Amino acid sequence: MWPFSSSSAPAASTSAQPAPPPPPVEVAPPAPAPPPPSEAPFQPPAAAPATLPPSLPFLAAALGLSTGIYSGASRAAKVFMAENAHRQPTTVQGWFFYNKTKNYKVVLSALGAGIARGARLGAWSGAFVGLHAGIGYLLPAPVMQSTRDDRSAELINAGAATAQGAGAGVLLAAGAAVIYKLPRASVRRSLVLGLGAGGAVGLLETLRSRVARAREEAEREETR
Image (cartoon, rainbow, N blue to C red; front, top):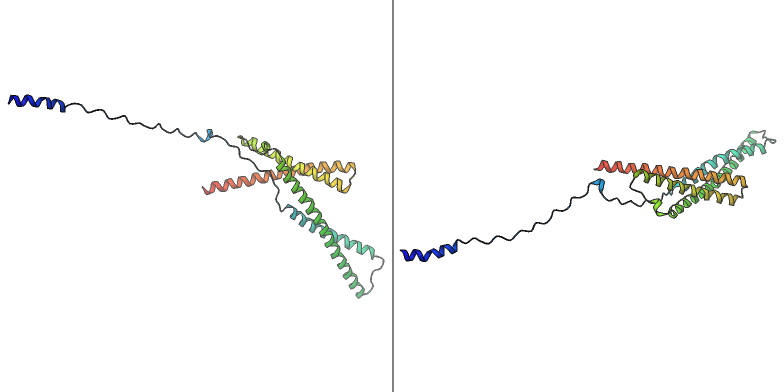
């Protein structure tokens, strides 16, 4: 018994040795938390130059046509009655031809005056729209971009749109003064009128864009 027990003791001691420790597990560092919305980097959107509706010349031409027809008809009727006041008809047939001739002259004069006034208003309105668009694309890029402050962005865009409209109005007034050869006093009046009217158009265009943007934001909020 003793020799058997002594020979088995070393084997038991060798089997009781501790196992090697496991290799360390590498843990990836946690991802950085995204910044809050207030601290997100701001990228100013490039604002396109203010543009007027392309249908403005057609509306001006339609307005000129209607007002020209009305004023032309009224003027032609008065001119015809004044020219024939000394030879009034005395018979029923005479009055029939008198009114028939008068109506023909009134219709022709009204159509001529309406077409002429509509063409003039449409051409001048088209020139203003073209000048307005050209000046908008010639403005420097920093003026036409928004900043981080919404209030400052609105003021910058409103000022740019006002300058854009005022410049187009002044150029149009200068062209009209050259074409019609206006005197010096009328030229000054035309330039001031073009400056004021063009600036007012720029402000109205800014207001229209702001209303359209607010409507789009409201529709976007409703769809969420």
